[in-house]
Image 1: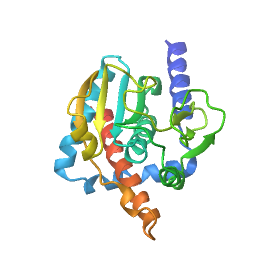
Image 2 (image 1 turned 60 degrees about the vertical axis):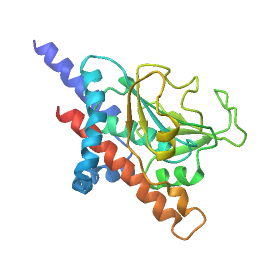
Image 3 (image 1 turned 90 degrees about the vertical axis):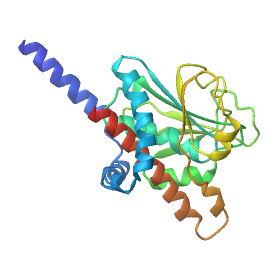
Length: 235
């Protein structure tokens, strides 16, 4: 019994160490719970649907696959992929069983303004020049994303939502823009389809407000996805 107790302590310590976020990012994330009251009740009801999907599959011991979908897979869906993964790590979920993806109704490129906003939040992102997977769109860089020392990186680049590198079945489709919502009334292979739209920060491109708007969108999506995983942890 004593040996088992010590083993459990060591496992818990290892898990906490492995999921400890980079300091700047951790400081950013610690403030998000204090902003949950800013989420409207209508939005919360929608976010509870996402939490319900995650919680049900996770409790069954299944892998949870989430694909965030917008039109160009350049801004909002990329934010969704990153913050869902970070939120899962922050709340202590087994990250091997929470897999996040993103895609568009067409492929373009992960917008550099998206990357810059994530970096300002404390996420470590580097462009990878030696691609380990095919990218079929010209000028579509692949980025390595890291948020904790002992967590394997994952990658961002623009692709269609049904790209071969994304799950083809048994996933939750989270549509984050109205155009994608209209273009994809049916998302083939998805177990659940939920529309949770955000205003496109592209409206600020080339203006003096650009950085501010991207930071606000980045934080809004982070706040709501942290709320989702907070609910999953509490149930």
